[in-house]
Image (cartoon, rainbow, N blue to C red; front, side, top):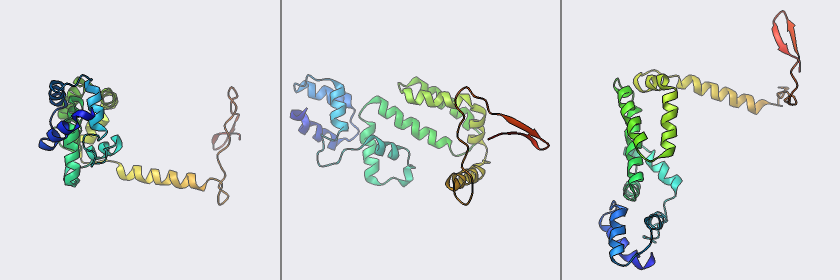
Length: 201
């Protein structure tokens, strides 16, 4: 790939979103005989632009999941460059943007979600397919979250904080730790009192 780096770098400076298929066709006319996968890896590793550090998958995911109005100019440039590397990357970025719009509750979001799920399932993105299956399993709750202004985020936050304090206090201030689990195959004996049935530990 190195013999074609200058050409690739020039083309990407002219148009950061140039499709990788176009770049592949151009360098094949110059004598390149390798695969498109090798070209994609070469670009994603940042070897076309050695003066610019490579963008890790984790950082790219963070950029894609950040509100567009909070992105800096260089972050937008990196996203646009990544979007042009292949069709799957372009489709993923578009689907993420369209789903983020649904997070602002509105009356028509349930129908828009159905359209979004259909679009996501039509793409060759297996991890996104798993996400859509999870949405469909609890569709009523998802529709309520996307269409109603009410939510239980405050309650869940208090529950999480309470559980965190409980875990931190095990073994402190005479707060007893949880009993050890019983060996497999053994049942826990119970005792019945006026206040209900409790396990004997």
